[in-house]
Length: 564
Image (cartoon, rainbow, N blue to C red):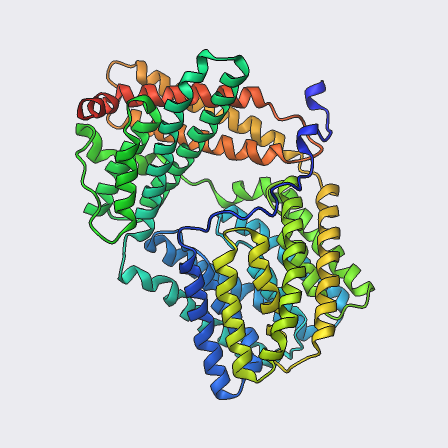
């Protein structure tokens, strides 16, 4: 059948336009930026005072864990950060033990590639990120090529553990001031996304009477806005459900989320200004805006949502990621071996470059490769300018590294290449904690490893095909259809069970979000069956219509209309 033919389609060209476009910063860019400065600064300054800056490599392993989980509510963040620290310690332990047992670069590269593949699979399966697996790969690869004896490993791991515990405290500290901050931000994003969809719906409705081309463009724009709104609402529910006890602030946030869902179901009857006003109030430190329940059953929605949301086993989530793990292992290994063949003294930079490329599909991997190369090359030039200042003494070296830590997190949410401009000199300066080195040699090694890692890493992505992407779309389509039919049956029932319709609606919403993410990932993949775009769009439209009908069946839309 032609639909099963494996070939790259014209829609999967490798883009250049827009790859380096600078976007808006993350709304919480300053949180990881400040956290990493505190988490890294205290251990490094302590080592500086003790005259043992050569041990900073090990404390950095724990300190950089402070970059993770800033979007999670604090109850979930505590668990996630603990697992991040444990994962980092496990990676470093494997690397240090390996380094103490062998000095064979061939073996070290192989272990580094396997670690990078495992880190990629686990980070994607648990959806921990940003920054995802690249920090783990950076630390473990560098540790592999750090001379070591077996007797030194426990002490070095103790330093990493202490720094990891400090990073955990730094990550949890903001909860003392704003305990519901992450949930409030997630709800605000959902309200803004719903308002954007309502505004677009009203603006583009008039185009239906115009030319077919204009109408199709408007319809596609509404579909994208609706999918973005559904994803934001789903993410906000996930955030609330991770908080544990249903406190009064959480109940108030749930009621606001119901308003966002109503807006998605009935955009023509929605006041976007009111949604945006609630979102602005959530950004501050004042009380959560109080709104009346949209129905008598509204107070139970959070409980029913918890029943509806169930995570799949880790093994099930790892299965579809095997092609990406294989790409990572092959690409990192080949990049390291090519670097060795070229006589570069630090092949782990090539390993990390390759590991940093791999995204959900080949198209995104290509874009990340371009961003990585451009950012690293500019970063090397920045290192050349800063090196004389950093070489004034150990204190100057530490302060420069802290400045680049802050700059990397401040810029990376605008575009990956901007963050790489600061990450590159920071990585080069870290190598000098054990003693100042010749800048020219460091810069040459970095440039060669960057180019090698990007070229070889992308070649591995092309060679290792991800034919499971098509299967995942079929599975996602089946899941949406089953959820839609179940919801439709409950809508038609005279008296659905208590909470049954709400639970079914949540499952359908989650299935639609997963379908869109799966389709977007498959659309940028090569050598697979053509993406069934029309079937995906039809499933999304019918699914969202069923969601809207469920909202009206529950009485939420009617009550909202009366209040409007």
